[in-house]
Length: 440
Image (cartoon, helix red, strand yellow):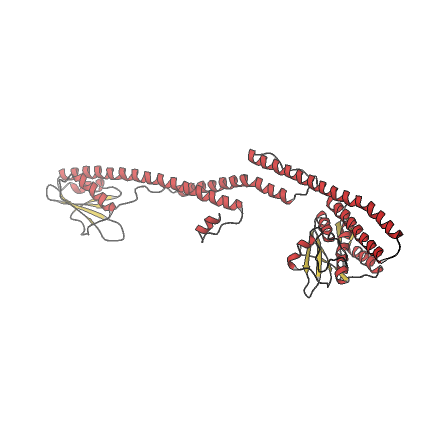
């Protein structure tokens, strides 16, 4: 398609595949229909033209023969009777004209000359004027002048109903083309919708495997792929959960042995390392559970009370967490999952900025937007997307001194997807990071 656009720089193709196929089929069918109609019209035109010229030759020959044999006094009574729609006879020299060099004039002149069979000298001229008009001048056997006044007309006039028939045919052509494109593209749209709604954790109905063989084969392949993805994800989560769970037992034993050892700088370092390993294991279990789903049911919560309770929990431990602006309204969501998301945001803000601000707004689509903002170092713009990947850590800030496993934002992103919302990170003007979750 790009090559077609390159060859035709003035042509602007539609964006959708449906429109492109419809346009291509419609243009091709309309061109083929127009070509067939033109060929048929030309064939009828040539046939009608041949019949008309043949009739003209026979009628003129008969009329001249009759007029030539009649006495001069009786010819005037038959002139009007012998005339036809596109030619008439005049007794007299006619009008002065100019030679006619047109192809139609030469054809008519040839037929008239053939009609008189060269028995009478004849001169054919075109009469100047708005109407295309020819006159053939000849002299009968008794020396009387005779003029044949010819007004060429269309050889095949178009019937009044023909444009309506053509319009109906074009409408049927457009309708059939649209229906064919819709029938061909609909499975592709269903496949795209199923891919957008793909969630291996939700056991919903698969893509319908009915229809043409190619469509059914694609649907079966998609359903099989969905099952494989669900199996791989479940297997990954089980492995991660099993490893994280099994590590807790040796970590606990090592922690007990470290506590029983004599106080020393090495003991403090060992306890600190064990605490970091234990946090990593706990976050790994939390990440596995968030990916697998906790089975929590949706509930209606009052946003003001919910956000205040989270802020008070941090304030009771001496953390600088504040709710900014007026919080109002309610939301239908999973409370524990939402609390975990906001807690991860607040923990990150406290680690890297020492304080956090919470705001709640409603966007134009009436969705609830909860933001946790700080004035810390932020994240480079080119790493914002990568920051939500598991175990991602920025070396300049997420080090051993600040702690962190790199799973907080990944857990928040997975839980947000379970809630049917969206998560966004962006750097604030003037410095700092904002983590925003939108609940639809």
